[in-house]
Length: 432
Ligand code: GLU
Image (cartoon, rainbow, N blue to C red):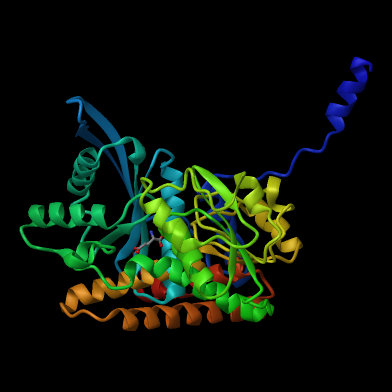
């Protein structure tokens, strides 16, 4: 082949369509589509496009070896038009400003869709919790709380768990914050242990809500739940509880995964056994034997009825979206689908229940926890669960209706619903 041929080929090659994986860029793309459809006015557009406040702190922490390590900690308050800001704190080596900015905005939309009186926020620390001891994590959490003690507040900003944080970290935050303020303040965070002002049903709330949204969609799509097959990506709190609820209601979960691997069993994986195995195996599925080891990509493209990405961002991209066979995707994770992938999924007629709708059960029960803390009166689990189910069904129906009305995918419908609600509050409050 002549060199000139190669040159010719290169110059005529089609530039691959862009597929940004920056979560903030993705959030803005989705936001723009919805804002245009509803003709969101310029002022509201500008206010809601950018986070209201951004905090970045350096956290010096004494490690077990006696040396100091400095970690970066973030808290982004996206918007507080509808109430105090709400959103989790994640610990991961990937945490960065744009990720936390996107996650904070998603919380604003999520709270509006769930119809709970909060704005949106998110926090994070760039660290690898799997490589840190419990003592190091405690010192890091306390340092972060101290640095953010004037940001957090029962009526200001209320954190919660997110990726790699849970009741243990929330208990440390309550303790540090209460000491600094000189008053026991359990309502400053949600997702606490039950014995420290936590709520019944909170631990399972997100996965339960993902399952409720799945059932609501299954009915609309006329998928037979008893014959349905599901693949669940991620086996942390959200993925494992989602899989557990699916399996216990007759959906056959044929594949599960975590960051140590993915497992496939066409007969259905025994989820209870997988949870027990993980619990006794340092929190990971590594070595799990009830299924064949497959790749993460294979899990996403299995021939199933329901795909539930419950791990991290950017799992479904332009590069693998066309291979997806599931007619229904339920986003347990925040931001698992890029906007480039969304275009392909929409063309293929795949229904996507977006993160800001599908995983709203967590923050909904966080709201119940917060109200219980304020009243000092606690509800039984069945009461919390049925309120969560009702709220998820109502949110799903609201978004479904908007989708029909505007003839748009559920993600855009969810944004439309949220934007209308948040901009209304913004306008009523007025400004400078
Ligand atoms: N981190 C969870 C989420 O992304 C829960 C937030 C909360 O409960 O405040 O929705």
